[in-house]
Length: 456
Ligand SMILES: Cc1cc2nc3c(=O)[nH]c(=O)nc-3n(C[C@H](O)[C@H](O)[C@H](O)COP(=O)(O)OP(=O)(O)OC[C@H]3O[C@@H](n4cnc5c(N)ncnc54)[C@H](O)[C@@H]3O)c2cc1C
Ligand SMILES: NC(=O)c1ccc[n+]([C@@H]2O[C@H](COP(=O)([O-])OP(=O)(O)OC[C@H]3O[C@@H](n4cnc5c(N)ncnc54)[C@H](O)[C@@H]3O)[C@@H](O)[C@H]2O)c1
Image (cartoon, rainbow, N blue to C red; front, side, top):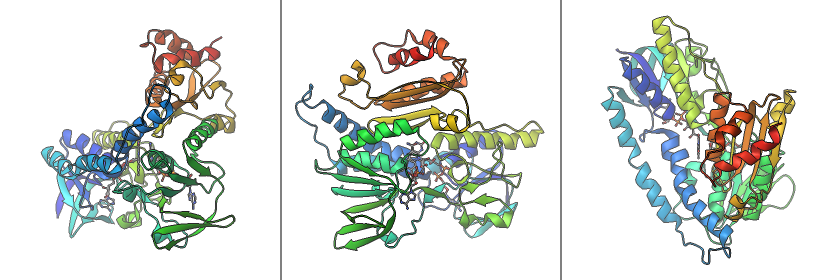
């Protein structure tokens, strides 16, 4: 039986990152992939793929906001052209992935992996021995327990549509629904009829509620209807139309229904129980060194019970690789730190955050100070016709940043500044001082106005 030092399961961003780290240190590494198109969700049908639609959507949305304020004619756009650009990128991912892995001395094993015991894996038809395993199998769209679930499409299907129909319902009020609803509202006809249907009493659970309220207002102003507290009983198909039925209230007739109601860790086919790996519906249990309940088996990325974001997956991969090296060298295990995890929702306006929300601080009884404004009327946003820009900065009583939240057209830049300040433990007084010479005028130079109320 062929033997490796480490077998990584999954060629997504998490699996590849760990495999490259370990191969670079001279370990004998194999990576298993069951899909005929290796490369993972982020590149093929997630972060990267969807960003092609985001960039065009942003131009259209911004132009609409500026119509009559300098823009005299809206730009034309074509969904299928964007689709072709995206596919030009994604179609090269599988072969580039395999070439990159092989070029770094990593053995590529095509086939579904499953545990036979804690050191033996069956991959496709063959069995392999390994000293360590890193599980990086990702997540798949959750199955919805409603009648007519077979009529729903997933985010994968949405990103492959060749044309955008006018009436679309997104089930779930999370990341994917909001981003895709913003694409659909701008990249179809002017009469798009776009609905977000959330079961809970609020949308976008991980984000600050006040900021979400502003994003919902911005979404509604741009033609997206957001409903909370819905109970969907079934979806029926009649010719080319679909009807979403609710426990109460009138049904909704649309051309497309998207299941974007969450993603489930893809772990069942691995037979994790055979190896004694503990897991739940939320994913594989891991400790801060990314070890599972079996110390030489690690879990990283979307399959682990942590946070489903691409760069979190990469960081977890680095930690797992460093943990293996530490076990080999008899040194201390590294620790994965989730205190400064940024997240940006690629809607227009974008919603970005890092650190804690106000609700989290209230729940923990942590005292905090706050600088918060909505519907910013600053020249920055007047110039782009944006009426819903907002921010919220939360600090402790010494000015240490606890959380930063932004709604605007460049929240990634703002979030990055606060992410670094949090990592470096820079108090707001010093951040203001250091920031005076930020390029002016810019989104970033506005930070001074946000910090003022927090400085005595
Ligand atoms: C539509 C969408 C948009 C997103 N946008 C963003 C964004 O803007 N920013 C962001 O940070 N995150 C985003 N995410 C989340 C991000 O894509 C994921 O967090 C990230 O891709 C997870 O990577 P991974 O390596 O853990 O898993 P994956 O990329 O899912 O890789 C897992 C791999 O394992 C393979 N596999 C599964 N089971 C087996 C098995 N038994 N044997 C062999 N191989 C197996 C799969 O085929 C797959 O190739 C988005 C996700 C989606 C769906
Ligand atoms: N920009 C980004 O970073 C980005 C973009 C897309 C996805 N992602 C990642 O992918 C993950 C999955 O995204 P997602 O949008 O599928 O999930 P999500 O967890 O963000 O949202 C799912 C939503 O669906 C709701 N829901 C569940 N069942 C429902 C039902 N029967 N009817 C109506 N609503 C229902 C949930 O209450 C929740 O609000 C995210 O958690 C995120 O980590 C990140």
